[in-house]
Image (cartoon, rainbow, N blue to C red; front, side, top):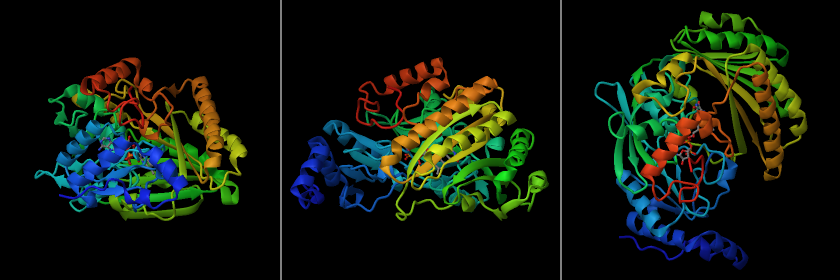
Length: 498
Ligand SMILES: Cc1cc2nc3c(=O)[nH]c(=O)nc-3n(C[C@H](O)[C@H](O)[C@H](O)COP(=O)(O)OP(=O)(O)OC[C@H]3O[C@@H](n4cnc5c(N)ncnc54)[C@H](O)[C@@H]3O)c2cc1C
């Protein structure tokens, strides 16, 4: 038994002024909850703000002062923590990879951050067609476990992105033209419900919850302690990166567009297009990530785009794990502030070209923002992925009847100082409004907004269709009658159904 401290040590050593502010910001309920958690699980599982060596992807989330951060080791500890928090009535947030962009999403404002990092195991089934993935695993954990067996799963592009957010929101992968989206490749979730009991959720057990979990993102129905993902044979691949001079942008978009629309027939191929403003040189740079899922150097399918002279052209035969990078975010340099915003369209060459012109025009107003790194990123939701959205009872995204492919566009930016938050936010509001006007005019607008790239104030769930939204709310009410995982409850951050 560990003796709880009545107050975290850091509160006792700061100045009187600071102490007032900090004591005010941490409620007695949460101080009690932290003490109880420390008493039950020991000091190695509990970390207090100010004494903690903790980092998270976004600076706005890193600035958050939590009461304590708890690292459960298994699903029983997750359930016990939920019981402690609801009994003490202390607010909390659940963190997996921590790639959210707003406070309280996955780092708790004044409450307890339940950091699932110890739940990062990956167990491959005997027949190698399934893997159970811990609810706190990041993409790199899974790729590295599977790469070693020449297997893979529908994972993301960046190793440090959490599987928790990815396998509940949607999960677009370079492999999506072949295997669909991540949510449609999850056969089962282990979920600790808001009442602190653990359930297995799949097509046959709690099917409505299974439908809802696949699309509503984390943070609405409880805490996922593991998920079972489909795995498949996958060896090394060709991974290429090109950057071009802006004078070639129109040609590059033309070629990328052909790759996008060809993906439905050539499922070996994946192409992501990036168009960024490079502040240091006051220029725009088009870039492409080109992947071919066989270990062939310079695959012929990329010959047309490679006729455009590139500034940088690299390619390697590599594993998905190696190209997605490390799993843990280094503490230095300190993270920047980030904003994501997104729109969806039917494919239109004209719209993609026009979107870049809008981006170029609007950037003028924010060019002086310190550390600005804005990009417009586009890739497809391949038809194969859309068809897969009807599998096993379907998912909540409302796309399964759409004739694909669709294009997802992500507006992503980073900057350094809080003083520029509003300016950057307004900039992307203007860009997004113009992009959506343009897609409506060209008759290629689609209302869907991918939650993984969503901006907090957007009504993501309405973009799934009114019926799906209504059904999601009903499922949420049925599993969470006390509203623990709602905006007025204890787990308040993030995209909430109510
Ligand atoms: C650099 C970068 C690259 C990306 N690349 C891709 C990509 O290739 N494809 C793609 O589809 N998306 C991508 N995304 C978007 C990403 O999938 C979402 O932002 C996702 O929500 C991140 O999940 P996380 O676990 O890292 O974040 P977190 O902030 O930890 O979690 C996101 C939300 O889910 C909740 N949550 C997390 N785990 C659990 C759990 N186990 N149980 C219950 N709730 C949970 C959290 O409480 C939070 O509300 C990328 C994002 C970034 C920043």
